[in-house]
Amino acid sequence: MQLLLFLCSIVYTSITTLVLSLIIPFHVLLRRLVFSRVVPSSFGDGAEPISLYEGTVYHQRRYPIHHSFKLQVRYALIDLDRVPHVPSNHLSPDEARQITDTNGPM
Image (cartoon, rainbow, N blue to C red; front, side, top):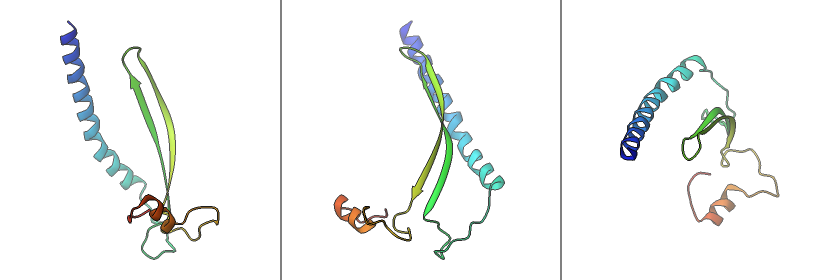
């Protein structure tokens, strides 16, 4: 009986993942068509140093006790290479690269 429950759980999770994965491209396309707007940039290449994202995180636990919740989230992604100035008590992009031993974008 547990084997059957385990197999059903795998099938259900696989189907749910597949359906949700197929919905993502349509959702992105719809958001781009509905919410498309041009933001002027002072950097000349169209990229802003700060991007704001808003969304919903959904968490569900089924074992050992069923529990789920939704959480509204907001993220601010900051391109450290494009900020106009760095405060004196913060790391510059070059200092961050030196400490982390990397040469990629920050």
